[in-house]
Image 1 (spheres, rainbow, N blue to C red):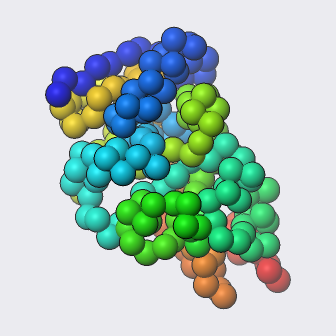
Image 2 (image 1 turned 180 degrees about the horizontal axis):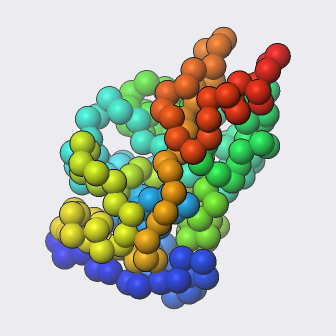
Length: 212
């Protein structure tokens, strides 16, 4: 499999580039795109063949879940059993932005996407490329760092092309991504837990959820 690369303006991606990527996603292919911090692999979470290809491309362990990008609260609500008040407090404060929130997935989400845990990681990105693709597809997208598991993350399209050539189908090269990765917080239990540190500090989350 040869990997294609298209140069884009990440702030104003062309309709042609977004359409090309969307067509690839509809076919169950994997596309690498720039986001607000690093390059990520996006794919259709409802296409089990595509889900399997993402795990294979990254060499990712099957018990690890795949995060999803959503466009707004409504799209998130459609993917979970019930969203607690803490979700809305966090999302209103930090979305769109570098905060990934772990919630309980509904039956609509393939169990394979959750790593067979029933838990789902959701984020709304500031990336105009990501938002344009989600809007075009009308659905959430898998979004996981564009690298082989255990290897450094990629912050340019050329890096993705160099490290994942033959593993992904298309790279939308928007130049460099400068930023810190997403903070991840789990709100599925009675007490929230910080899973991964990132751009948003733990004390900011604690302040936001004080009393919740």
